[in-house]
Image (cartoon, rainbow, N blue to C red):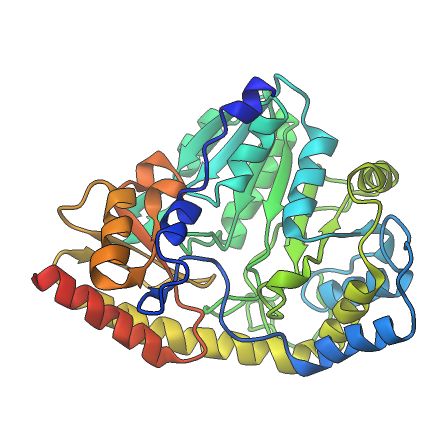
Length: 400
C-alpha cells in the first residue's frame, strides 16, 4: 500500500458513530444528513426510469437534459452558465476528487481553509500533494477568515486553494467582497480555486443579487429562493475556478450520490476522460431523479431551508444557555459548532457523550487540529423535539 494511503487518518466521526450505532437509546446527530426521506417526485422519477429499462451506460459528462437543467437552475441564481460547462458526477465527493485529479500533481502545494470536512484535505494528500492550512479564527463562537493570513499563505508556489463556504462544520460563509479579493489574489499568483459550494442554498441570511442576474430586484436586494454568495458571481468563465455542487443537502438526496461540477471550458473535455477512468458515468435512473429534483426545486428547497432555520433557531438558544458553552448561529449549512469549556479532547468528549448521555455528536478534531475541544451537531432533524431532548441530555450530563 502507498505510504500516503497508509498514513491517512481514519474518520473520527465514524469512530464515534461506531461506538453508538445500533443503540436505540442514543440520539444521533453525528453525520451530515437529515432524517427525512427524499421527496416523492424525485423517488418516482427514478422508479419510472428503472421501469422503462434505463439501466445502461450514459455519456461520461451526464445526460444532456440534466446538464441543461443544471445550467438553467444555476443561471437562475448566478450569472448565466452554459450547459457545456457542466459535468455530472457520482456524488459531490466524486466531484471533489475529480477536480483534484484534474489540477494537482504529486508534490504540488495545496492550501485549504480549515476547519473543514476532512475529505478536502485528505484528497490532495492521497494524490501526493503538500497540504498547508489557513485556519479560521473563532470569536465568541463565530468563525472568521483572516484575509491577510490567506494572502500571505497563497503564493505563486500554490497550485490550488480549497475553500468550503458555507462551511462544514463551522457555518462560516464568505462575503462577495471577500470572494472578489480572493479571486483577484489568485489571479495574481496563478492559483486555481476549488470552491465547495454544496451548502449554498442552505443559507439563512439575505442574499445579494449577482450583478449579472437579470431580474427586477436591486443589485443588493434579495434573490428569490436565494443562496449564499458564490465565486460564480464574481468570476469570468475562463478563470481558474472549479465549483463543486451536490444534490445531497438541498434536495434531501444524500444516498443517491449525484453531484456536478461547473468548469472553465478548457477543462471540460479532460474531465470527461477522468470520469471515464473513475466511474465511467452516473447511473441514468439517478440522473432522472436529479432532473425531477430541479423541476421541483422551487417547492422542495425553500421548504428544506425554512425547516433547517427553525431547527437552528431551536437548538442554538438552548445551547447558549448552558454554562461554559461558546456558540453562534450558523449563517449557512446544517450544523451547530460549539465549544464546551474545560474539555480539550473533543474525541474523548464525544465518546463519553455517547456512552454516558446517549448523545451522538461529531468531534471537532475530525475537522482540524485547531477545532480540538469543539463539537459539531447536525441540526437537520425532521422533529425539532429531538434537538430539545438532545440539549436536555447534555444539560443533565454536565450537571453530573
